[in-house]
Length: 147
Ligand code: HEM
Image (cartoon, rainbow, N blue to C red; front, side):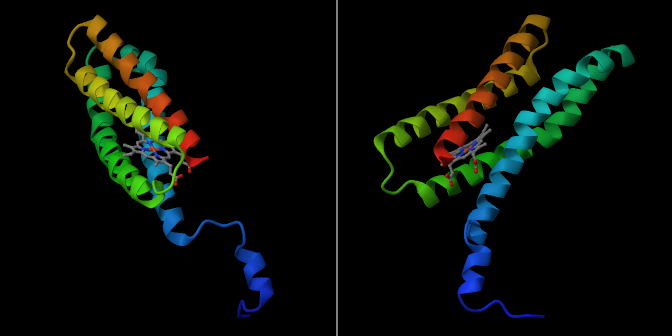
């Protein structure tokens, strides 16, 4: 196998994130894809679940929560890792966006938790909407932070 040495090797890897950064961001984005994408997918599956039977939406929701909460823990864990890796010497605006993002992530978690405990249709709808809107806002703010 040819060895990658000399100026050509630098060119081959130029523009790629260093390995640890790739692991950190890949895990964070994996968590976001399950947490945010899962909620959107659940909305899409709901009409079919309703047609399948009166208990089907709730058991689908319970199955999703077994994926959703590990993803949230992964997001918070890798989020703290992101902050320790990137927070030094950031502009004031970056710190403001980070503060707003942390509040929005807390709102998303609270909304999802209350959605899981709600029994009325209104409660399910309101807390589900809060969780989804806050989760999408967290995603957009994350992209802003990554620059
Ligand atoms: C609902 C939860 C969350 C979602 C959906 C989310 C989503 C994202 C996304 C999509 C990115 C952009 C990644 C990229 O473009 O490479 C990002 C970056 C980032 N997130 Fe999150 N995130 C969440 C929670 C958190 C938490 C709790 C923190 C802090 C404690 C955090 C801190 C950061 C930081 C600092 C970046 C920039 C990383 C960098 O530039 O290397 N995130 N987030």
